[in-house]
Image 1: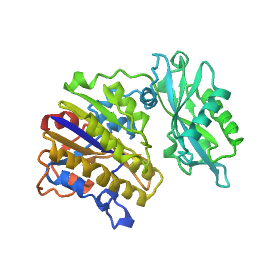
Image 2: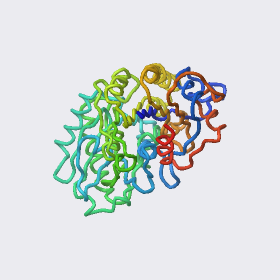
Image 3: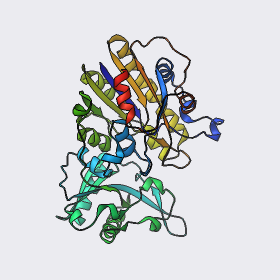
Length: 395
């Protein structure tokens, strides 16, 4: 059997007044998503365990069949692995966003958590400049993809307890006073000092990006391989270092696709081609598309619907045609968490999934891939990591 997981990041949402009470997923034109839902298993999965904050790191770990309560040690270490960095036992990794601040008359607020989605060349230049000016043997800045970058505190665990570092994701505080959310707890004096110095350096460059923001701190996890758990080899296809790193830690080899951006203009065709080139017997491919999540963080309803429709048209349509011609292909369509257009951040709650295995003709009563349709079925997984075992046993 051959397995393909199509993960549209942050596709799930709440009912929208502008959509007459429908969610973006229900309102979008998604004939191919509906085809998968109508001819197979439709249900819901709770990807965010209690006690852990909603986010892509936790949600995707669950979907890869790993219990986050057992294996999750922070987001940034996963991104570090995605960049090819091998963390030492005592290192602490931090996500380092390039951001844009703004003024509201009362003080400085978080204007844009992504710094306007800078081009890769510009972002790399900024991060390298920060490292040249502020980096040291102890603190090293690494460029990632666009605004998503990293800080590595070498030997940091010898000086502070990483569990006592208190940081806030910048996409959670758009429009909020940044002074209320600066680093707190262990190591906060050094972290705040680096953020302040970087802001001064970046303001001198005169561009839209005028600061950095640390979050997602963590240490190297100990994750068992996908092969040892399920007896399959596989690949992960994503433009996001987090997903590539999580895949690499769990034994799913990252496949690089030229033109994959993590935004709505990503290379959908290239990702589909990578699936076809790498899919083999007794293998699994985890295909991740970030665009719906980015649209949600920006509060852009039209872009979120367009992102969902592009996944349907440019990813699922060709994959379904491919599956019709190849024997033994199972597709799991899913999302990792709710990302609310109103809240502009990740939210807790069950999300829809659908599984369809050859043949890809005909339909059943399910009919629609949406939050509401999935909630009406009896197929529910209260623990996200249980879905993978079920998927592989059903495929």
